[in-house]
Image (cartoon, rainbow, N blue to C red; front, side, top):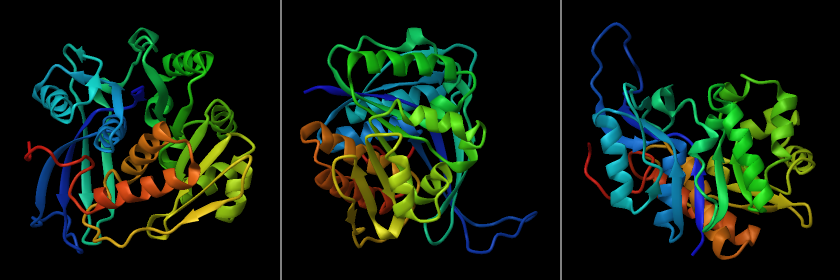
Amino acid sequence: MLKVLCIGDLMLDVIAQIPASVRYGEDNLSTITTRSGGAGGNVASWIKAAGGESFVLARVGDDSAGKTLLSDLDLLGVEYSQTVMPKSASGVVIVLVDPDGQRTMFPQTGANAGLSIKDLPSLEGFGALYLSGYALLNEESRSAVLKMIEAVNEKGLPIFFDPTTIASMTRVNIAIMRDWLARMSTVIMNEEEALFLSGASTVEDALATLLRHSHNVVIKRGALGAIGQNRLGVAISKAALDTSVVDTTGAGDSFAGGFIAAWMQNPDLDSCIEAGIATAAQCVAIVGARPQVTPNI
């Protein structure tokens, strides 16, 4: 089976499930969980859990967090580049999760920054690339990641791209972001991000606009499910599954993992969106952004 190369961060997620009303300057009782995270590692993990094969390219620091992050990938059966950066700290994210399961994140990229084209493995045995916008939007990694995209395009492999949050996208000119979309086979983003990138006021108009840049566009709509279209067909809309939402950390990454794993078996947009929704439903029902195969760190 061909593998999916995932380029993105590996992070240690420190997740605090907080009360509805936070009293700043005082103690607030909360439930703290520590998990492996980062978009690259999350997507690779969910691809593996969905029956695919994956390989994540990312960097960790020469610290206990880095050892844990790589150990967790071993337990999941995800392959990875063993790039341990000496005298560097691994990336960490502080995640605040409210009683409705909505998360607010405070990331520190750490050792993930500064990717080099030398980090790109041989593309033999790979069938696709997943690219997190966090890697491309990081100024220290951008030049190398653009060269990686060029190499993957020359190989003729499909690229699945998640441009990530609006806050991250505002770091570059929006015209540059749209130019990047033209280099991707499929773009996967949430509704707010799609409206921002397209400049449209409705999800349908956003879909039509973004299809001018990329062959396949998928827009995640949270409780409303997802909508997608390719240049040859009509829009496909799928409802979300009824599930108990505990923590939305990694919801988008799990959707991408399920979608891509299905695509590697059969590139049918309808069934791939269904697979993405089903995988995301598994993710939001648990604490953390990964399939649960290990105890808390």
